Image (cartoon, rainbow over all chains, first blue to last red; front, side, top):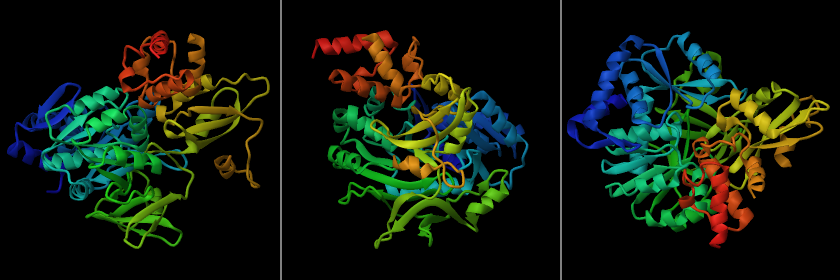
Length: 439
Length: 74
């Protein structure tokens, strides 16, 4: 099968009454889900060969819209739930004024570039299926599994889990984040024997800190937990292994551009923080001379929407050159050791400090600034903004944060602020990011 | 106590309106965790996921009540 929607048709035929999705007390069977998708696809036919942008929500309706857009022959562009309206309009307009290269593009997922300009990553139908196959084979998604998704569905970390669930005719449980931690644990009372979930390292840290007893109670039901998207502390990994001794715990290497590349079960004898395992079925990687990681295979993106130059700068043939630095051990396992560029990876979201600095510089009273990543006891890491203000200006971190919230998605607004007399620069006048990384 | 808690939380939640009567709705999981961690460290009380309810985190007054209740049962 070449498209994820073909699996949906197969599921509705083979298991019409099986629950496909559970969300906020509502559930749909595979036959009901397909009926809703087909109905909505009819309404979307007019957008065939066009991009359909829509705000992401943690809901059944979101997935109906997503599948229906594909079925209607259009391209799905799920945008950030809390994106400021002006930015949403800007992106929607950008998407509507450019043509789609070919008929195989399924999705455009936005990520952040080094300059802060959003990049529309084009994902083909084939890449979606290849990602799904990778996860089914390497992590053991099966038809009687209930998979719990807490993260935003427009992010590759969560969206990619929808594919193996649908391919196996399993059940998806969607939650509105992890803010209601009791709701997360109540999900495991549903009448399923086997559960799995995807949690970013910050969420694992939070559960370990406040809910370790509850985690122990669900240990026997939790077949596997995947993490990825951001570095995880060795101590958190070891603690999770202790609490969930029989659960497969995967650390995965993936990105929006490359798809799902490799995975490593760190609860099978070797708990190594940097290790991201061996290549998956449809993907591969190699370490380049400058220690950057290059990826190849069926899961690669098709390019950046509307930006051939940018696409050519990272792609050659079917190979994508990432800015991640890595090494390969004697057993062919990938280890990640850092990044070559200035992008900050915060809980799986790649952020450009430049974008945040530009927004801050447009705030009243701010004459210079630098945004950097600092350790944070709660989330592991957080953004900190150092600012220089005009003489006589009374600096208020809360007022600046409120201003930034009108310009940026909430996860891009720094949590920490410091007023300084000057921002350190290099000899040629560039922001000295290394200095701030070291203090 | 209320003003002290406000100052503490303003330091870790710069974009959250602490005067809101719908505080729980404004918070994300990181915000909830920040509140639990800051208060448990400051007052030496045990807070866990069971305490992170919409009722306890409705507004600043309900947070103060939760802390007072925990301190009384310490």
